[in-house]
Length: 214
Length: 252
Image 1 (tube, helix red, strand yellow):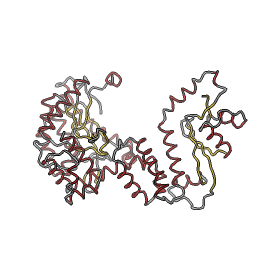
Image 2: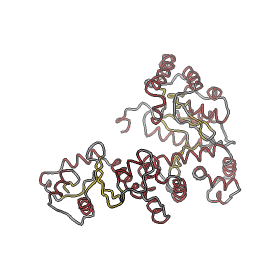
Image 3: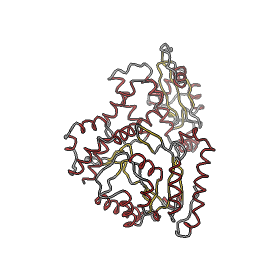
Image 4: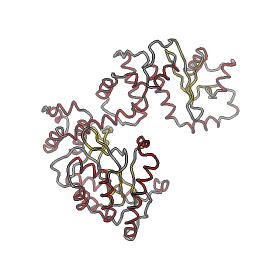
């Protein structure tokens, strides 16, 4: 029904949660997207749920890596291992939010390019890029301006190694519109389109999902 | 369902810096409320010390304040420095929240009305500006086009009445001159303390694309209010028919 109405080629959700069920059975909003631990039991639950989603909605389903500010420390797997297992076991795709990856790498001091080396980039169908800002001592995914150079570098790396990439979305919060203005936004989109076009031909050959413009 | 309990516990911590501090201080009572494994308790105990927990708490508050500050902006400005403590009270008394903008401001509005009566919020303009903003928001969230179409579809046999208050209007009672009060707030100024006092009835109308605000003469305003409370079902004075022409009254 939804697919008929909106004609979407794929759909996605975040690898995080924002709704919580209390002991009384009522649900409420957590107020902020919170990460899930990359543990075996969580993976099993996610596999079950992703399979259910794919059963109900007959278009490719993608999971998106989230930004996180707290660390669980002793998880069974790294995030890349978790996502690789999840995509392997369910056949779902990935929405790689490059700015989330950049924010996490910056806040938690890991190498974002190493993350890309570990992730199965053949599963990436869409990427998100954005700008962010410092907030209370950490870098946040506030969608508040142009992409940092590091995000462009990461996009270039992903686009060259993700044959299934079909879309790049520049995320931008409208309250920051005066900061960039129409020419600033156009510049970001053109830069993304140039990178997409540079790697598009090879990626179109390897998948049946239609390409989308940015 | 340990994972569900863990998620619930983490969300409660993110919603309350005071709770995080209590857990830091060894508040074991917190963990007893949830069906957590030992590993999950250790994880949460470590997480409350991370800088990222403070950031998450701040983001939670930022996300919760957004609908209130956006849609009840004048009320927040009038509360001034008192806003912070009112929000603290509100958040501690409202554990459950869906964070939908409309529901959130309705809840905060009810909370503030209660606080005006019980906690002595002294600013004389808060109550009427709150009523005004809640009424304005109600109009912004109604299915305007659908209601207009419904009103256009009224059969000719009902066009002569009886009448009811239009679903596209709201009446707000001010106790101070409303235009000067709202103009000062719109200009980011503190409203003067000596605004003319009295009864001022204002009608907000969404009959046009842009919500319109009009000061009613008190007698006409009270007539509209009495129709609203079903004390008067039908009148035929020229003033009454003018209200019909204005679209404030519509066939039942």
